[in-house]
Image (cartoon, rainbow, N blue to C red):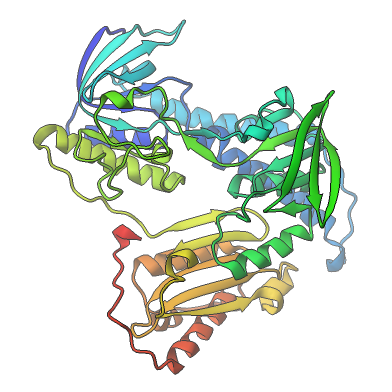
Length: 489
């Protein structure tokens, strides 16, 4: 269906995870809604994020465990077909994307508009049709608007002149073969996951970070242990001193200082994994009257997702808040529901926000749940317990006994506050801990739960026992209960 003028209750810019959730929430409230998308359908997660990266990691883990089977008395000859590795990544990636696209295509035709939207005031959008598309330029009059525009990779200025030797994570999963060598700029979630995977799949990898950040871990003890583990496997510096990055013919030469020595190495390509930025430029937000912060992101209430007191709402990666799929889905639902009710009576309500849960699928897994160390380290009423996995039973059985888990509890109340970890199979323990935080359990209550033997979770029990013992001997009375609310966690 083609349109020149369209009147709706809710217009949603972006048909990714947050946008689709917002659309469903608005329609569930009985409102007329339209999804506006400028690019191909299919979420960031399915196309260039969660799923293709896990496909790559699964292949890398298979190689790694086969190569390290000798201590079990198992020997094998390993051959990596790098083209088939990437062929499977692309096949399965396309299947996941196809499932998302099928869902969008089942939506009513008058609920979808393909084009690039810009604001012309807070309740008016000009949608420029995509050349060759089925739609025409359209003016959308909307009582409310949801910004669900997603995000794009950030490319550091030092890398901008590398031409086709520069890739971002959006490009990786279209490769036909794993490269011979790759320099990864960024030691955050994306950089660590892809860097370790490429290394295990036979590429020569060196990782360059900035400012000491490592996978979003804020606990210095956990970060230190994780860095020791990763550095034992591949060259990585989370606070690298890079002097020059230059393309020379078909390679990239990088000059950097390592242990007081100036070194130059050549790589087939460079991966920019220095984070992502919200897709909010060129939207005409200046015409809406809403307040914009220094990053170009609207100032919003994370409980309601409303931008100021306006008719504009925001969700998903566009908010630059918590760029995770489950958070994007939750934010889209909250933003869509509030946009719908605001369109009727100008009212909004706080939505359900879950306890923090973030996982990096490296080996070992990195994870944070509940309150992070950065959020509680200033408090005088916090006790920390920990477990080193070096001698943890099940971890030693699997020869995956590397890592450190730290849990945080509140003096006086004994309530579990949060945890950070570098741990074998940490993705599962992180879920247990996030559930415990959201249920507002105490350390004592957590220790009353069943722990099977032998499992890695027994390491978690050790950390809980450690913090329980410290809680028992402390004589510091709490200065009022820090009664966190899950909606603010």
